[in-house]
Amino acid sequence: MKKFWKKNDSQDDEKKENNVEEDKPIKTYDDFLTQKVGVKLYQFLHLTEFYILLTFGGYQTTFTNFIAASMDHWCNIPELTQRGFNQSLLKHIGIPTENQNSTSYQKCKMYSINYTAYSNDDLLSGQHLVDFRNSNSSLVNCRSGMSYDQSHYISTLMSQYELVCEREVLSTFAASSVMLGFFFGAFVSGQLADRLGRVRTAAVFHLLALATAFGSIWSPNYPLYLVLRAICGMSYLAAYTAYFTSCLEVLDPKTRGMLPLFMAFTQSIASWILPLMAYNLRNHIDLQIVCACLMIPSVIINLLMPESSRWQLASGNVDGAYKTLKKIAWVNGRALSDDCLSILENISKEEIKSKEEKQSSQKATVLDLFKTPRMRKNTLIVFGVWFAAVFGNYVIRLNIGTLIPGSIYLNFFAVFQIAAVAQLPMRYVAFYKVGRRVAFMVLLITSAGFAFLIIGLLATRIQALVAGASIVGYCFAACAFGVVYQYSAEIFPTVARGAGVGGGSSFGRIGGFIAPQVPLLGRVWYGLPYLIMGMIPLLSGISTFFLPETFNKNLPETLEEGELFGTKEYEERFGKAKELKDQDVESKLSNGEAGTEMNNVSNGDLPTKLDSNFTVRDPYYTDVQKY
Image (cartoon, rainbow, N blue to C red; front, top):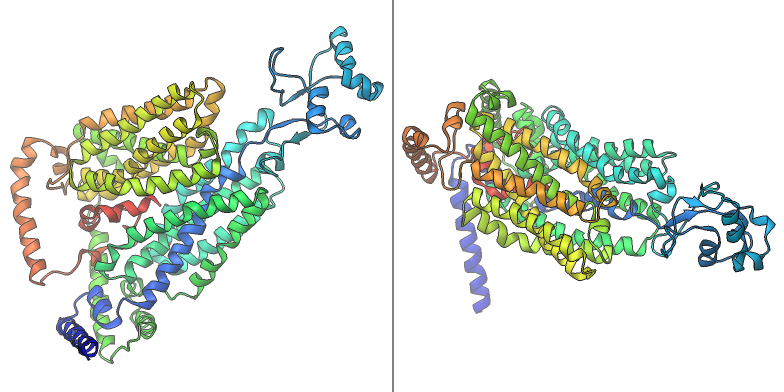
């Protein structure tokens, strides 16, 4: 009986709570979504599709650690292979060593010897080498292609496209091509999603990403492969950006704030699925096929999803929005009443009005950020900081097999898993306990310190120490990558926030593009890659000292305020006025007189631009763009 009464009491409380919500006037889209449609099963299905895309689509970037891995190779000598010599004997007989005292064999040279003139006994005794030295002959390039050591990988891009010798540097372009696609992906998506719709845009690019993912697997040549990978990267990020926006628009403000936490959880799961697959699929063709097939469910679900009702209202398609919301309500176990259509018409008018006001308002461009000295200084430093943050993040993520010694599978898991856990307290301290400038300086300079430490640890030849230092250093770099969105958004004034953050993000992509090439510097000196990995964040961290602090500060809105931001004059002229303005806004919000700020956010701002107060005040929201 007690359980029965408790159950009834809870049901009564729930009904009372719902009645209170239903009594509230519906003025905004979020009000309608919460009170009439509900946030239940449909939103769960919508987010499930997004997480599938985020997890398995993201593999198209990180699996380059495995498919573009290096394989030990040497000249193929058919005359010796046909005699049945095993790999060890074949290299001993036909492949020269690096030098007289070396035990490692050259990869691209062979002896110029007619092996058919020697018996097996002569070859095993080394008579052919004696004759070779006496004839003063020189080494020659491989004549019959390459042989590859398949003890670890059965095949990679290196063996498929003969990326060896002078062409070996081209293997790093597999990751760079995807990063190049990322550069264009967010821009293309932002333009189309406002015109065609969020879900429709995501579906188009989703299909294109799937097609190029499969097409690149059987590309007949490497240049075409790189083009297809670039298109795949562009399409994936475009689909992700558009669908991410649709997720924000189908959630209420309370649930919307939890989205980054769920994304972090998804990334944590993804960090052990991919290395597990790569461990069991040593053929790079098989791994690419499986990763492409894993994208199919999300494509199918994407095609079945209705268009974003919020976008439909903002576009004036009230009937379409009503039909969409009716379906969502049905999935959530609710039914829309007859008066809902008139309510949606009023909401649509407000959405269109807000959109037109935003488009007609004067917006600054990137060029405006360089017109005044203080703003120019801040912009140049922020762009450099973006470069360092993106570079520091991707230089490890895309080079796990070359920069971190040990098992690539365990290191891959450790890099993503440990970093995901370690970043939570780091970000909490960075966002809520210390200033942005101090946090960013500490994160960048500490990551640089670990990079310099690795140079000394490499001399010890203790792989565990080097791997540990690399992973810890990556944790600081990854956290800095998350903070840079928030910090740069707060430095620029409102009218130039989108231009400033967008320009910084675009400049930072250059760092992501060159990150895969960093291990090549090890051919000059083994410590040079780590020296570069340390110098870039070190210089950027020091330059951050000359930026203004934004923590608990009133943020600038105009270009004039942006020029004075961080000075005493700014505090005297604008600080107190803004405090009164903020207090007035908070008073209205507490009295229910103001709607949520998300009502004024269009796809142009999410997630590629940050020019609304909401994106500045919510650090976790801005951080989700890093995925």
